[in-house]
Length: 380
Image (cartoon, one colour):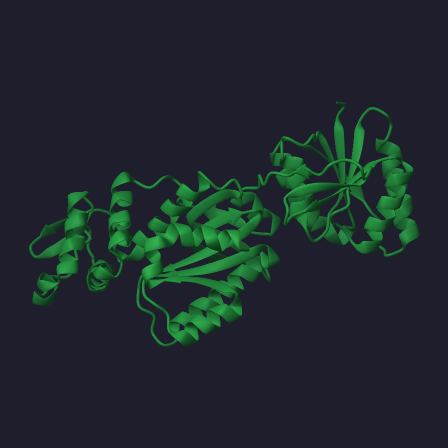
């Protein structure tokens, strides 16, 4: 087959522009990105992502007006240039304003250019011309980093390396015991939060802590894998990371471990991450957010907030509003969010989460976290 040139209009759905291009099973050698001047920032982002994948990108500036005749003339000039017989030209009619798409389709038909649209919900490419060709499955190949780029964000750092074996061993043990460890975990959080000094030493354990069987079990499992030592009636955490792990990050690690398992069996689960710091510029100021867990499933961002402390009367609602706001800013209609809480939420908080479209996985549901995560992602 000769080289294939994709002609696309940069609009409000950059994913439908990029998806058929970066799927290696669909021919693509050259991309022509048509845009109006006020869409230049979006063009630059799409160009950067496509270029990083090794594709040749050509800029085509459309007239900055809503005049259909001007748009038609611009597309006529475009197709006249690229339909020279040396390559096959396809037009992606998935994005762009209505008058741009209609003008481009009319001209493309006159030049016998193949025309297609992407249906994101079905992950398929459908042919508009010629219409007798079968649809083509489209594989979701975007990464989290590329997704954030498309929405004007930047990944500053992440903890996407695999979990240390000793951490994984502990999180699965703790999750399996569920509610039996609640009293112990609250005391462990207290000790880890107040650990200080160069040796990360906790306050001295009091008599009640010594009698707390759940706490003693937790300390024992941490000692067994070498994450803490017990000396002079106090805990010593080996590093800031082990201190953070005991202070609640263990549930974040569990979420990542379960996502990693799901990625082995769910083709639509493209990329995962945890402890990712993302920045974006708002009114000239750099704003950063650290995200506990992330999954990119079917080109939709899934944001996960993890909590191991019991919420007070106002904290849960603040967390839910923060999640809703993050979802709007980081992915808009292409994102969903979930709150994973070791402790149950109140009925009013669950109602608020429902109103905001936030999935809640809490309390006993943690024992079946893998199934809950899969169901959440696949129902969107």
